[in-house]
Length: 371
Image (cartoon, rainbow, N blue to C red; front, side, top):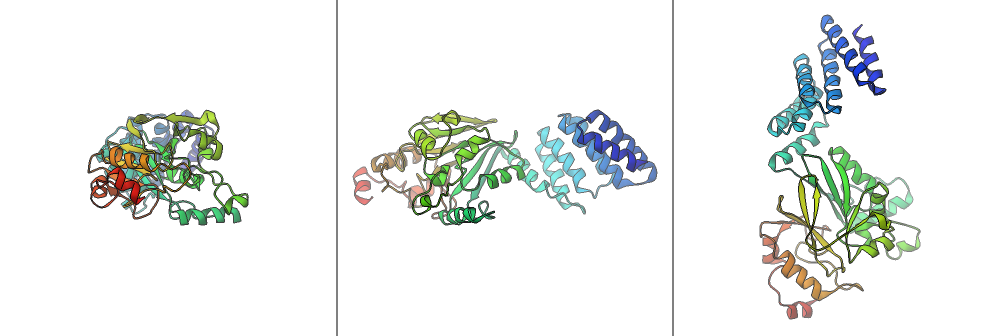
């Protein structure tokens, strides 16, 4: 009887008939309990918890998850459901415990790994942050010969991309989403966060996609990036000085472009990001500063121990000097620096770059003579 009731409940759930599904799952749990089938009782309560979670009925979802745990403490998914409810109630220490139990149960729930990290970030202040390296984390499994060429190029370029936002609401923006947008979006989904926008640090193809330089431009190869984000209905935040290049070269529809200015604010959930105009590498280069997490994403303005190229047609050495010596050097010393490429390392600090990098005091005349 229990199996038949559970099958009926599952069919109702798949059809979106949640009231019917709840009634049948409750009946199935009772039938399985009479038969002494503890694990089946737990699965019914776990499904009941999930339905209440879908309805944002978190108190009932939590109580149902605890019933699942009482029926089968070894079933990791029951602890996972409890963690979900606790996370939604912003009870992060308890959620961390529940997700930890889901991972260490004799029947572990692998999805709890990402939720555990999310709960830990939420508990520390609520900023979600991930650094993603092309050729290591994305752009690694080509589906055809063209993609094989693109992914190989991506691995050589060593671009960093970032997901940053609110660990509470699970909303993030993708910074410099390029090369493998599908892979990037999968990483976000696996981390249980929703991408709500894209930020471009500057217009170059390896940060926003589009037509690559020779010889690849003669091969009919186009690198995906900001245009793919726009096609998903997401706004693309670009400094006004680089916006037209992103439209023309990145093939991003003008309606998808949100033009930014120096010290403009971008709110992602409850997290505030400050967009700092740092011209030099391009006229509209910008950095993303998150004061709450004490970090700055510097694109190609600042690498570890160096800076972006200054020999391209629209580079400006004097502007780069000001961007480094005034804008970035003016950030708090403990601010972590996350660059746009893995040239010299994955991260540093403003303090360290003032000691050994290009944030150390350099006069404009010295700068111009050395560049």
